[in-house]
Each structure stands twice: as structure tokens, then as C-alpha cells.
Amino acid sequence: MNTREVIRDAVPERSTPVMEFTIVDRDGVGFKPDTLVVTLRNYLDGSIINGRERTNVLDANGCTVSVGGLVQWQMLPLDTAIVLGLDDVLVDTSRPLPTDAILARGLEVHVALFEWTWNGGAGQNAHEIEHRVQNILGRPGAVAGAGSAAGLGGV
Image 1 (cartoon, rainbow, N blue to C red):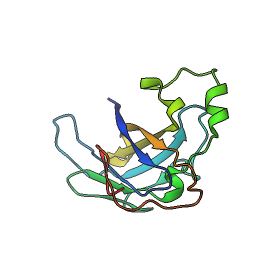
Image 2 (cartoon, helix red, strand yellow):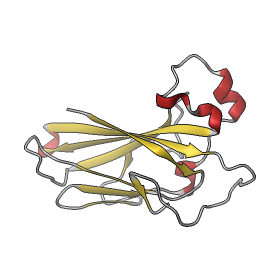
Image 3 (tube, rainbow, N blue to C red):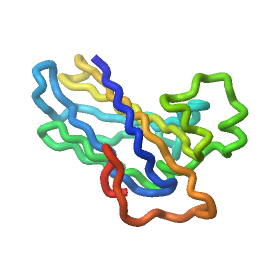
């Protein structure tokens, strides 16, 4: 069964939060999978963010996975970059607005899809995390410092 998580608190654009969740089996016991990839997309237009399309993150590319299944992905500044301008966000009505219809407040919604396999590929599952990125005016190329958001640590 696939799972979906929505993190409502926004992270500042170009910040470096840690995204985390736990991979568990049908009995709720955490485990380390054989493979783990992530695809990071903009919710509104589906564009790939920072080239993260089926990127290997099994103990690679800023991500660690414990034997108990805890996944911790340290995002890069370009993973939280704003990819659409505000005019693009407000004009495109071809897709339904994400929960809360918050785009008009300078927020962009991103979706990270984690997919994994186990037992030599016989088993597979996925976890999707929808999260918001706050457009910080006057900060092109800047990297945020300390802070935190629910569900995301170490902003």
C-alpha cells in the first residue's frame, strides 16, 4: 500500500531541510530496502526539480537509511528552489489547486515520491511527501540558516 504525507508548514526557498519517514513492512516493522529512489516534482506543472528523477538515495545523494527503515534525506538548496514565477502559478488553472489553495501567498507546492524494492525486487512500495516552499522575496540564490518546520527538520 502506498502512503501519502502532507506537510503544511512551509520551508524557506533554497533552505536545506531534512525530510524523514520510516519504511515498514505489513506488520509495522521497519526495514532497510534493497533499492530506494526519489523523484522531486513541482505539484502544479509536474516539472522535475533539481534533476531529481528516480535519483538513487539508498545511502547516497544526501540520504541515509537505517537498518530499522528510518529514511533521512538532507535536501540541497536547489531541491527547495522556487521553479515557477508567481504569474505562472496564478495563471495556470489546468490542474486543481493543492490542499489549502495556498499558492497566492507566495508558496509553491513540491512533491517528493520515494519508491523502494525489497526481496530482490519481488516487493515494492512508495511514500509521497507533499511539502510547501515559501518564496522569499529579495533572496535569489541565498541559503537559509537555522529554523524548523513540522515534519521537516534542520531547515
